[in-house]
Image (cartoon, rainbow, N blue to C red; front, side, top):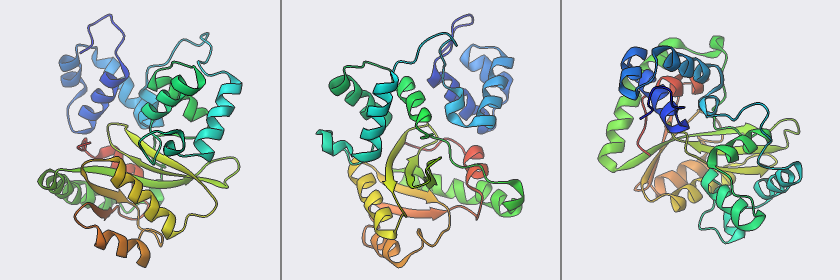
Length: 267
């Protein structure tokens, strides 16, 4: 844990946020991690304002980016146009550690996963689920999900030795021709793919297949209610692989609220 006077790591900041979100007070978390109460409060406010990426340790404003503009464009072409297996990597979906490995072995750029996360944000790829407007949320339904459905999911995950992942699809600005298919744990571990054009049920099924291949554990995939996720093709796939994957749904329009208040999931 962090010592007073020593800069906390990204992992310690994320842990602090998770503990506060799970009901611990800022004072309790500060004592546990050996940091100031105001520091924990500030990290939590940063998380609320900008998601889990917003609590990553950042370099000073005068420090140059680890990826040059040319390297960033090369990274864009890799992430937007290829898959890890195209580069001989043992996965179908991108992760920050995989991109770090690729950058080191193919680009000759040795960077941290935090630097990779910054580069991805410059490309429009974030590990934050979309924030939905408060007026779109049925607060009673959201509270019921938080207080009853999610604890049951955690118990089911423990029974099945499954990982809980939060899945989402989001357009990548400014083109909005490219879509991000992403699965995220509350520990900020993300697996993703960039898809060009409209996402059809077969594309979501392919994404689920790669999730299953890339992870050893069983999966509980939590996502929003949509025609894509409830389509006959997706339903048939999930039914046929019920021993490995299970779908669970947020209340309509409640993605960010529910995720931000949920307790840390197994990953």
